[in-house]
Image (tube, rainbow, N blue to C red; front, side, top):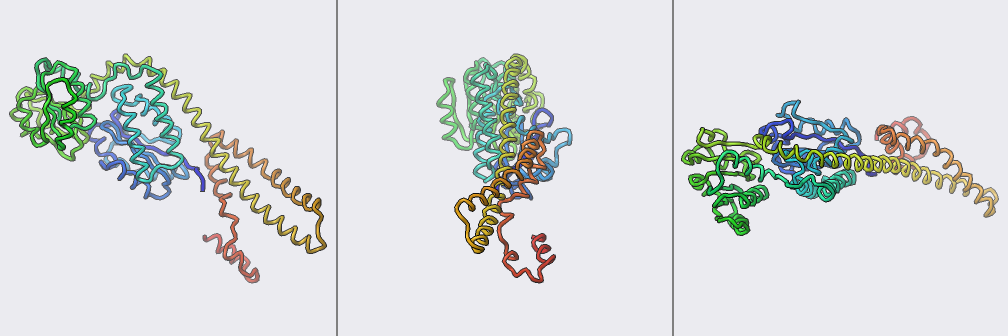
Length: 438
């Protein structure tokens, strides 16, 4: 009927959850699958999901907040209660803007999250999850993310997870003259390869399931680089001083046996789920996961704090504008529905009255105008107080009143029904009861 609805959200991220808990959230499903599942739940009209290596989130639009909470109740059943953050409508709006701006990222202000939000929006839209409410909310988040990066220095000297991995590797081993193996040539693997290209390493080996894609990435590097198939990755570890793994594989790409002959090797696992078996960490081989990058990124976070404060102020202003627009829109929708319903009723009753008056001797044009003017005045006066109440309800976040009005003034509510056309004799309470059961 309308664009009415409230957003409910849930997030599991690096701020409170472990890597294993993030992996389990949402059942590890892809965005489209998650959105389709959420849309199938009772009362859900829209759904959006975001899944990255350090956060999994879901948002639904429902008629009321209670329905939204129920729809998301089992989104992260295997995650500790303290690691699951549930968001109401306003919290969801603000959180989405903070995520897109990079304020919630492991690396403060990193650029990759903005592209990930855009792709998640595209995937959610393809799954039929995006309607007017989430379209407005997510696009506003994207707008804020773009402003943050163009109007502030929040991403100056940006550390992506790929560059943070290289920085961590540099702290643990000498990169000058080293050979680095990058497992996975997707977005994160390509980022890591480019960061290694800017480091003192002598050689980069890219292992990927699709060899031509790895060859394409390798060709863009100035450092000596070679591409191999993913099945060659275990053998390549024998010559590697640094291994950075970032694939989308369902299971381990490198297990303890694969790394048994690697010698002194630093492995940094960016995979979600994990690419490197933690059991491979045997003293000679050191395995780090995303949690280990927190110490590396803390330094960047400190340097960018002043810029983050500027972005926070930007978000406050954008949030206020979005919320005011949301309130006005919801109130206007309810008011519009109310007036449309009243106008239909007025038109029907005026036509019936004029027909009867014509049958009683006819009306002049002036008399017809008087009758119609009276009807218009009655509608305007009767709806003036409810109109004020709806605007006040929106300003005070009284969404239950707004939703009740939307239901009461459903454009279909005054349509003639089958029972309306039935003879009135003998219907009485039975006719009313039958319509109430509908």
